[in-house]
Length: 311
Image (cartoon, rainbow, N blue to C red):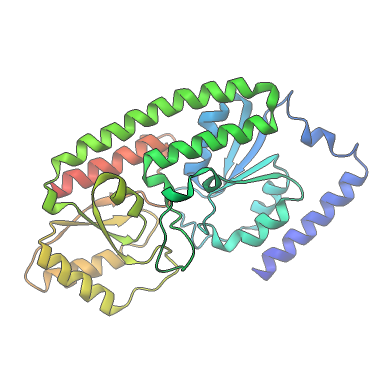
């Protein structure tokens, strides 16, 4: 982190020197006649900004498919891209915990937005792992993500009031899609027998999903993948799976599969056959150009995979 911090300081120094010769930085602050240059941390946030901003924004997402935001450290290239941005959107709630210092410094040069600030606090889940902090995986309850969309629209409108009506209309159109998605999930999960609505994954990313759609959620790791998984964790969860006769467990695209594979082996050694029900998108979306490369498609994939394996 010290090396990245040094890079940040050096880049900021260059920006300050350049701005001294510019006309007060007005070209960067006035976005009414050009696209807003946006940097987002995760694919989910980038997708939200693209849907609300439409043709008025140019969005770069720092973290691609399969990237774990809990462990991600900003590269020199990331710092450079953020320093040139008009707006930076990040999740907040310590999802991008290794980038906190960078965000703090960037506030001198760009509008920095934590999308979780747009969520009603009573909707946020407290975590035992990080006392006093909230679970950051807010995108797994579509109704909560809809609040994020409204927050993004408000922040884009503040930055570019001349086009506020465009952002409002885009947000309304996208919110109607998300409302339909929310209903789809509520309908599909009814196909899973009530006693089998237990979702076992590599880490505790799905508690918002569980609370919203009626699943008990168990993860080998904690809220953050930075936490360690021990032998006792595997054995205890294996006992629980056998006791509940849970038919399937799930790997995640942004977490190495070895944790779930070890759990499967521990369950099978107890004489109960549990299958790996498929791969879920947890902290990152799918490849660009695929349905899973957009938020609604990612969520539908997860729901269809879970329902198919547990029904």
